Image (cartoon, rainbow, N blue to C red):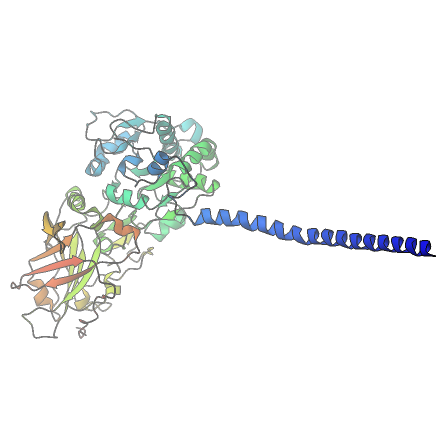
Length: 528
């Protein structure tokens, strides 16, 4: 019996061990099955976290690269990085090339004027070099060949630049090509502002930068998604490379479109590259006087102006279009970032009883000053006066910006005291001054004189105080282009006390955080 009990005990222990081993094995299997989703989730989350962290980095913090290459990629965009593609014909260049010569700087810029044939006269050294690309009427038809030629010039400019060793053109200095910038021979660019705008974008990404037309009819006829070529547009080099790769077939697909700019937009749309809008590109599909629009420029760098050979002179004090534009371009070279930037302030003349009248001062730097004989609120002053007509000729537009009617004496729509007296730039000088910390600062003094040919004056309250003004002097520190990397904000101004009743001194400065115009100076003026 003892042997039997021993055998029974042995087999009983064996069964228990087998049971325990079976339970342990089942537990391990269960643990493994439960762990698989966890490890899968962990792997996916980790991979997404790495991807998310890369996306969150600033564009100058891409995955590690050689130090020299990374430093070059993150360096500021300058004029040396821009290749200009200027559309022209040998006929139009003879008439409009002078507008290009206003802003082109030999040796500091690169690019070409693209002609449809060899020029008939000598080619001046002060002009951009030219290349000839003839229209292909046999392929595109006589009606569409010119537009196809200029769209093709964009691809040709890319191939020519990419074929050069490091993208350098003759006499263009140093630096790789980052952007192609298209414009017409009557487009006036403001180069430093163009570089400042493009510097905000990562040139290693695919960008298409420009703006639409100011006339609704033109946008409807062509496309709101299109950058109008006369106002100019920029294409980053990666986008230009992809565009050049499909351009040949793309031109055939969109041969029925009207302009080269519409063809380029249609081809970029195939690549999925949308228009990035910048309000400083101005197509100016308008007629008549555009000073109402320019005097209320948006808080953005002035990049370009177009159609200046078709509009009235932008300054009525200049009888010739070119002279008026040259004045604005000359001022912009003293302080590019501040050009056309609006500042608004208010002033009570000492010669009048306190509280009877408040003058509104609206400065469009380097161009003109509007002086109103009443307190006009800023939201009105930053709305352009409708001194222009739409491209169709309609004075009522419609336009892509809000407008307000230009006041006239005895007007019923707008009271007389809402009509400005206009002063235009007469001269600009630059001087050095010392800052509060003793550092040297560049400061400009611009002087503005009344419009030479003005309409009848109003008889409303305060107009006598405005009408006697003969000079408005504006002081301003040179604006740092880095301001465009910050949130946009209009700069403030104040009117300094003047002993002379026929002049004003206005100082422009960066607003304090909580500073507001008009808060302490609003005076209600009765309507005439």
